Image (cartoon, rainbow, N blue to C red; front, top):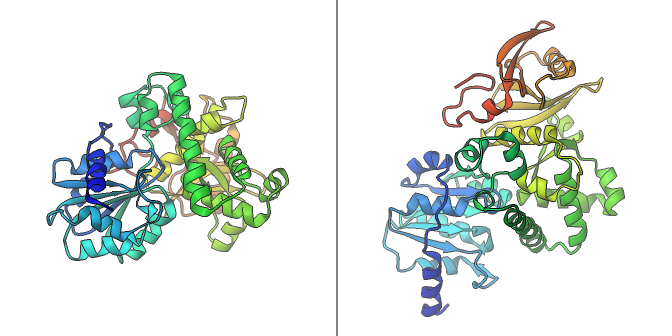
Length: 408
């Protein structure tokens, strides 16, 4: 790479893009001066790049955008070094969309080991930046999941109505867009970029039509179990291809799956999984449903928030068909949660929690999230159940968050 081209690219990248201040910044900020690398992973356009730039803008930093179309397709660690060779020791290096660079792990590890630079890394693939990053850096990295705006953040920048959040979602640029047409265009581009660049190009998928159809099916049916047999019949794909495509779409943060709760890992893996969208606006855009189905959307919003709060998320279905929407686990603590987008939830919502509690003794107080404004603890067939308002629960702060069901 010649020096002139390098200078032009650096000048093109160095402008800090104005953005919303995000809650996760308070958690990341104390670590940015440490000896370990900080990596931000999550959906494309969720705000990782601007968060990274905001965190270092008061320091000497260099921002490198490895998603820039003017860069060569086959990049390796030598390209990182070419951009950083003239940086002073202690400079903050932001490596954006690092999954596009082969061998980047060794460069980052060396920069951290020698205390040459402070390094912040972003990427839009869950596999690369959650488990593999930590392993490759031998414990020299700290990761943060960056999702689109939470309902708390949404109410600060757009609307205080839950219904608006369930339709618009949390992508920052979508929220800032002044009209519905602009929002739809942005969501269309996000979906197509994820399909074409984050999945098809990365995993060499040729049958893009079937891949897109599968993504549409998943986003149209949040909270429903995924049946490989039914999808195989409708998409005319092999079981192996279906499993691979599901995995690819999840690694690109288009959807995530929730397994059935069981103390046996083998049993949990054998049973069907439920699927949810990572963003409600994208779900609304892609969905082929003719009904707004706010019940499903509210359930999806709770699923996203549980992941944001660091819970392992499962669902449970009893032998008689009763179902618990979520079994939220942190360490040894297990909390069953049901969601009902109504002020008058049917008895089956509480009955399901009672049945689950009868089979699993060591659990936290079950939670029933509804649209009731009044919050209380009620005894239902001998079981104490905390009735919480969905909006109030979604508005709770993440930092220092108490266990589920307790108010801040």
